[in-house]
Length: 277
Image (cartoon, rainbow, N blue to C red; front, side, top):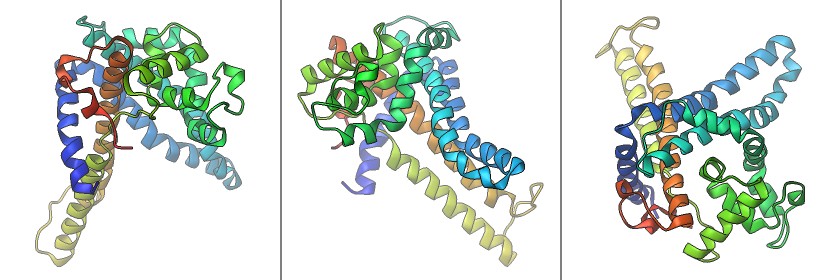
């Protein structure tokens, strides 16, 4: 499927997902904060390590992966919990998701770390085993793949251990969709469209400013401020949109897998929310 075709598929999904949460906009604080962390922390960590000793900058990647994962997971589990409350017809109290995430913190920490390494672990084992999976009660690569696909809503909604949660998710997904690896559709193509539109616009503004044809004087860089700010704003918008939609769609599909009910706001065709494999 081409890039434009993906946008045509993902665009309506994104619109339905956004409509599902805009009437309770306070739940959006979680994906917005998660996006800010994902974009800002690498630079903050790298600069901090560089100020201590430039030779430590290489530690940015492992610190980012293993340090950010639980924090990102905390915000996403909180988000999915409040989404699940909305989908169940209840009105979540602002902040109730954080309380739920803290209550499940031990499970979500391990789950978030596994998510960072999940693809590697799942691909390094066969269908019958996962390296180190026995340490956390995950008995198969298929269970790990299923958990990765619905990680945050599963931790937010379920009550069991990580292993029990993974097996529950896999069993539910298998009942609905068979043995295929199920992943929710995202908005990567839409996000890339936003980013590239911002980049192209910023380049055009920079060229016009250099030629003296057109410029908007905005501190601190005068006519070049917008050219610098637009790609940054585009990247943040794309990341926040992707994170927001991902949470809505994965939570909706998790509810559908477990109890067979798809939230009305997302239509009645669950397969339309699945990513092409």
